[in-house]
Length: 216
Image 1 (spheres, rainbow, N blue to C red):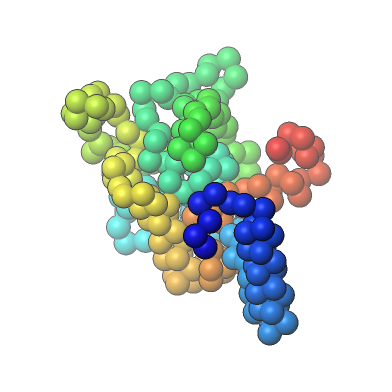
Image 2 (tube, one colour):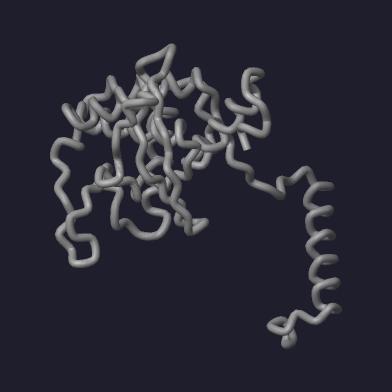
């Protein structure tokens, strides 16, 4: 272990061998050695959004429904909603869709993300969800940041901004947990915010109208 910082070849071979042996022993006992994020399909997403709209706190329901629908459409990580700003949002009149910057802190990247009207169900329509959030939810009370570093920045989800590392993702995970405990069938017991991303990816992969290259 004294040579660990230098990673000599003998240490790597020894370490890999021990890991393999431990994993093999765990499997032989019927144990679980990996924890993959569990996703859910579009029908479950519709039920989640419907459940959130019907909860007692109307403003909170509009906010949470908007976040889940937005993440699913963007195939985003849970914490990425905290980087979305109204400053970058605009309506593309020619193509009839909404577009704004989508930040990925994990990759240190930012992309233009487009959002389109849903053709079959208004409950998961991102544009409808944003409108409800702004007009009737907590989005109507958001103010621009006044800190020197973020002067004039209008966050879309202000209550998710400035949280500790992983805080926003955990908050999204609690939304899903609330839906599961509230009786929404199809939300896995061990699902978390990353399950939204997994489910959205699966939805693309299993759609015969979409090529694997387009999904990637």
